[in-house]
Image (cartoon, rainbow, N blue to C red; front, side, top):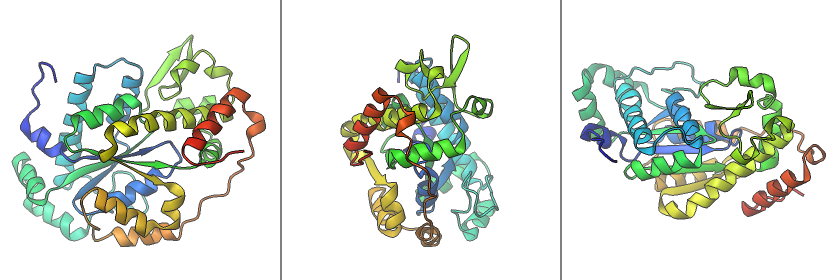
Amino acid sequence: MKNIAIPKSITDTTTGAILITGVSRSGTSILGNLIGSLSNIEYFYEPPLLHTLSGLMALSDLQSDYAALLMLSYISNDMLITSAHGRNLNLRQDDFSWTFNTTAWKELTERWGAVGGYQDALEYIKARQIRSGFKMVNCSAQFIRLFLDHIEKGKIIYIIRSGLDVVASMINKGWLVQESFDKAGNYAMQMENQNIFHAWAPIEWKDFWTDLNQYEKACLIWSEKAKSFRKIQPEYKARISVIRFEDLLQAPFEEIKNASIFLETVFGPLTEQNILKVSKKRPNKSDTNFKSFVDAKIWKAFTREGFKWGYLFE
């Protein structure tokens, strides 16, 4: 990093961080909760600042050196150090956000008694080899590279789901109608000719974005995000693992066991309990017969990318 010194405490507490990602409605929340329950991993659900960084980098509005500093500082101080103090308690057992339902009560109460100041937190993290794991959706290619280039020994678990089911689920959620932008939360926005749209929308389609229907938008988002990640994967092959959503529901124990080996950890006290919940889960039935609503060029790109991942949409 040019002219920017990163404190050793920050590099130490970000080493080995884990990013769980995929396209929206691909099962990232389910996977994140499972990975977060593995031993010595502190799990965080869609950290707001990191989503904003991802969007800003997609818009080329933030230099990578400054983005790296913000990312590292946030993961270290606002996420892991705070978590080591036991400040992010969440008693709602079925709530995936900012989970402490991945941490056993015994450990939590131990932290309240043992971790006082900043130095105590650093020593607690080091002694137990704790690292952060967080999930984000629709990450920009720029953010994924930022993570892998600046997080020492950082790893990514990417979940892929059939584009047909992802699009149908997005439509059911109503995320791609214009009214949804008023509830966009921490996602960075693009502005073009007074039209607002998500930063993760394909940039080359910005002049036509508002003319597209929600099916076309969803197809583009899935195909563009899946393609951008597929192209990055070979460069960082040893640090990326891909899980199919369909396989996760079919054989959750085996998939998470393989993930734990990839992450060089073991099951935590709550991992098998969380796996049991997933083993009982069945995907919601959605109408995937929407080809007639999609422009031929967009559908061709959508089906082509699906084929690259082993899905047949025709």
